[in-house]
Length: 471
Image 1 (cartoon, helix red, strand yellow):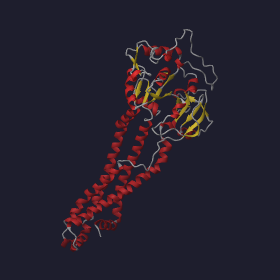
Image 2: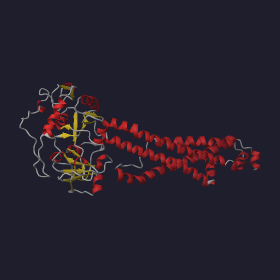
Image 3: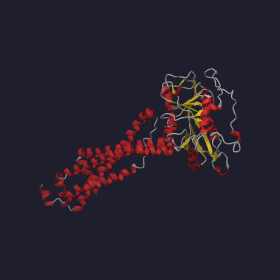
């Protein structure tokens, strides 16, 4: 009969206190497992949602606000950029995909964001290795068409062919007369795309009030061009990929004629006026490109190095800023979520330490009842070191059993909570995903068992055989 067999029989003899002690360890481990799994899921969700694009380009302001608004559809848009600026970036030889976003509007009740974009958005990997899948329907093709996320479809019960209006700027008292038709429903992605409504950019610009007054657009363009700082734009096909300088007073969204004649702005006559929105509601109309704006531009570059090099060039110009979404989200997770995660882990570690103390108290209190048992073992030839090893093995077995139960209980609770969390937050949780930190729990638990079993073991080590047999 080996040491662990004797220790196990001793545990079985004291079934109730051993069960309670094991349960206290299991609860601590289960809580830590839940914290690790949920924190890992949230961290992956935030980082993965931001990894589909190298850069997010938007108006000057807070880069974190730009990322939260564009990638996660949170917070308010900062300002808009000229549509011509988007066209310039799109023609850049280093850019693989340039996706415009127009944000600010919401569904009629204000629950979900409206995103004006182009069909190309659904062809690009939103996370490396993962593309959009359509549960029903097809991507945008034009006009007043809409593709809705999985949560939007579930919340409103919309199906293919459903029609809905949108609220201008999120103002529920200003609902546009135009109706958009659902032509596609996305499969769940576990990202903010599940709670967004995507409409075609042509339909967005066709809504009265979405175009900028022509005179105001030209005044803003002139103001940007007269900035004191030199405007640096990525070289669109320029030799060596060097940035080109645009002199003061030039159009910041278009290169000079010698660099790219195709983008040279056409002088407008004084008689040019903004087109009047006379088209019937629901009918696409042409809008002067000078009056078009975009809220943000999602950029996929050819390489990570190009993204790293071009971001400062865009930021030096007074027109726009370029934010690395991964860097911004990492900073957010580190500065805010990271502190909360650390606090929760410390609390769960304290729970496990308290469980270890309960194991110590349980075994130590049993020493007085087990003096005769220990004395008999000694009388039968067991060494002092053997008795010490049996007590330590008992503590280790209790901790190991608590770890096994805690791992199963923690993942089981996450499994039970996953549907509830998904239905309310669109966070897809894999309850059986093993976080790397879980592997550190086992040696920690075994080390705890060795420590808390040592003092009771030393007490058993000192038991006098003669007195023990008389007790």
